[in-house]
Amino acid sequence: MRDFRDAKAMAHTVRSFLAHQNLKITNSQSLELVAKAFGVSDWNTLAAAIRGEVTAGRTEVATPPGAIDAGIRPRAPRYSTELELTLQHALSYGDARRHQYTTLEHLLLALTDDGNASKALRACGVDLAALQKSLTDYIDNELRAIVVEPGRSLGGSRPSAAFQRVMQRAEAHAEQMGQQEVTGAM
Image (cartoon, rainbow, N blue to C red; front, side, top):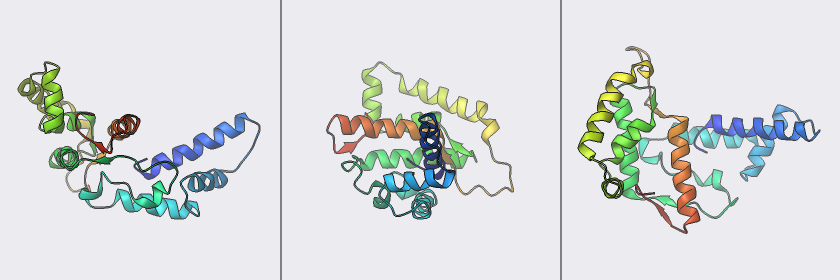
């Protein structure tokens, strides 16, 4: 989970599931259940922890705070230093273009410069120069709809839901493989 909306979606899913089981709970109760599942005392504490992660500096984007992990499962694999830099580059591509969201295309463009990812891409026969050109053209020309108007407060490009899911899958894959570190090759 990377932001506040994901936790609320989880609470909605819990409430819907229980409703299908003929167990009616309020929205507040479902929010409290999600908070308890993450090992925190209440919803407000969880929301504050997540908000702190969302507004944290860019160097902390890849590292979830310990308050949320709270022993529900074994410690998730950490991102490699190189992958953290790659994620920073992806976010900076979105920031530089004043995009509201950092998309999978921004991530893939950044991964073309990541040592582990580029090695894997080349092994699959990918022409990195052609891919970079194609992605840059697409980002610059086709993503105009997500450009924030001049004068509006941006505060930094946020990872899209798809971007976040890819990162969560990479973590899950590394965990399943018994890896302690997530790299660009995951």
